[in-house]
Image (tube, rainbow, N blue to C red; front, top):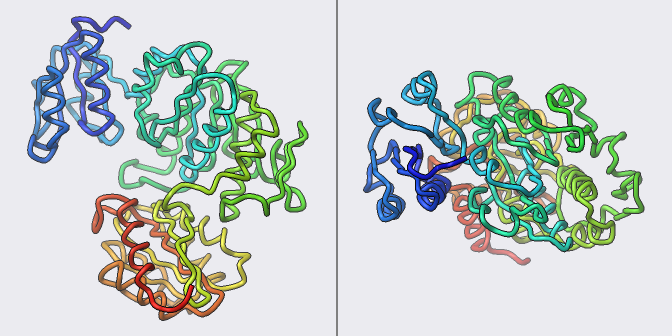
Length: 450
């Protein structure tokens, strides 16, 4: 795609948007930046874009700003906008950063999507593929924007680009070809953005659309309905369950096609859902040519990512687990299920910004495995409503410190206090990471013995 002299726009000036501005300017394009926020709110990002020579149109989305353009690149957080739709009707090309980056990448692309577990699996596959003698890029929704990979050795035919992709990033792809596409799971999420669960699922399914016969679609064996989402020509391979190529039998993670055998007890990842994640990553790595010994070594060494089932400390026989990244009900349910074999009960800390799903699955798990729920944040009344009539105790907290103190007072030796909010963090915190940090700080101040 020739960009020199083209009139382009970047909508949304977050980390991804600024990376796209840099890329377009290095290719000689004229760049206009549009964002709902004003220059003061954008801060350094606005100054950086202006220093790169971009024209700034901030504080709204005026119709005129979307005219006379050859290309519009939309950042993943940007919702549907009428000016964008009208630009598309006029014939302007409107793409995501992922779609644009894919057009410049010669290396095979490995992409991981799903409602939960994406970051863990992306990181695991990246660590496994680092054992290969080839340049690797790992990023996407996980960290560095995919477009930052361009012009690195990782995007050459000998390289490999491994990216986590959200549904937002997949909304505007049309030509992106993914060599190994991993769909981990789909549960209700982001229903504050999508008109239906089906629309959310359809966005995830775009990861498969351009696959060819020598590509792979990796899916969970215990979710056969997801196979209907594979619209491309990729070969379907399965993980987990009873029929997956990589699955657990008699507490051993094994690959039925190779000699890979790793006792589940050797894994440092916590929770049964992370065992499933390990199966998915191992299968993808094998398809990419990683040797069994290297896969096994990474599985034994990898302790997980911050704020994802992260053990904080034990106090008076009670374990404290930070799973602040559990920002939807499905993730929180998986976290609770993952603690089902500990023998004790779960005291759950939940709440934040509601994302439009039902909290009844949370109640069903807690009725079976829980002792109490401590709720906080904007969604607290909705969670309380879902637990109406439950025998599980429910408390309200004003702050995270208060929530941890109340949870500690309810816990008994052998129990686990679990931060798995089932909500986004933006009512009280800047991010899920800050929420997890505050939880860990509160736990650190608890009295008692380790």
